[in-house]
Length: 511
Image (cartoon, rainbow, N blue to C red; front, side, top):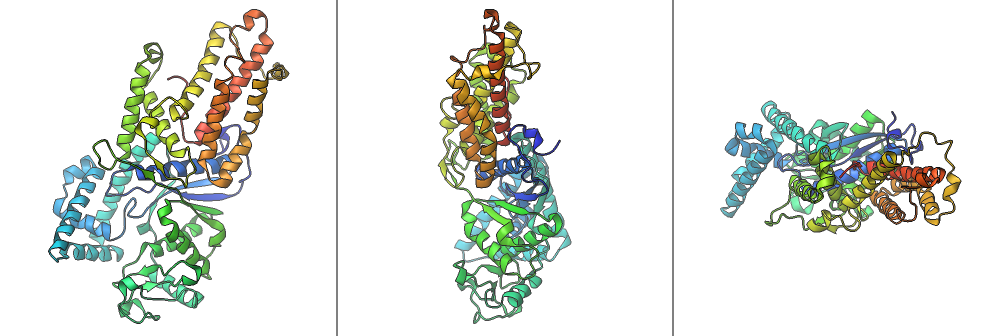
């Protein structure tokens, strides 16, 4: 099965022969998966599905900076902290939470030392980082262990969310090649990419000195209104800008992509603009960065706090949503008894609620997190979409049992009988628009286009139940009309289900 065919109607082959790499999610090793990562994860998954539905070959990549957290002075702090506060038993039991506690504890030590005018822990962390960057075997082994344990835990969360990755990568898996990139930026761009000591680390005259002179290395992009991004610190350690540059080239050499997307929040707008510009200035960069690279930015989730006021983690959000949906389901005992797996069903409804709240508005818009709205069945919410799909499935089951009505052959159905009903015509025309919606959502990189389509289709179906009746028509001798109307509802269910799957939602048949 091709990547596009599994989504059914609405797919196309426009991207046949093209390959896209999509980097998204990237949580932190030392921190539990929090709600801020949810946006990148959800948006990145939907974009991956959209590209697949449009015929592209998609490589889903989870890039680990000190998100999946593998590089930087933060890692040095974590390594120092684990020596002081770490427990092998706790690490095996719950690596994410334990590393988070260690990281918080060592950062508190740093704060206390700073009030005393001491920087022992900070300096030790920098030393660990420099040694790791040079390939120190013991520190590299520790880093790999932290990373592998963390990825294993995050995969559990991804499985719950219905998210998959083809590649788990990271900064430390890319050779920094600092010297090479530095020389390229000097020799190939001269005027546009010249070294300078930024004010924060001034230690010389700002001329083209080498790092051995004790100066930071930066690229002057002032003429592009992009400032002077630092590439290397005075102590010779690298900045993630350089590793992103090397990483982009490494990925192109490996995947030969036609396009690469970075699904990262709008706080990183400047970073990616600088990164792409530097790549475009490198004469021997093997691809045109301005054509092939794109930053897919998004706004923040505001008010992400638990009821106790602490930062909220994704597991709590999903657990609260599941519990709320379970209580809603139990309120209808007859329906509840017909559900095969209440735990799984309530979890799917809860995740639909969380994801749809995140995707309703344009991705660049920040939005306030609302516990009550997220778990409501009223209005345009995730549970409402699931209810619309479930009702379509239920109607098909009922007419099959009570009227012995099923669709066995499309050729025998007279769809012209639908044309006399305005509401039926409206639904038919709206279903016909779905392929255009899929193409537009891809072009704009907007999951909200699909969400809007789903809600309007659900509203059209809801308003049609009383005027486009199926049940009872067979008994009145109107089997042909009943078949035509049933086919309309089946098509509506299929399209709604296809759109929901593109949104990484699992359409339910009972709830």
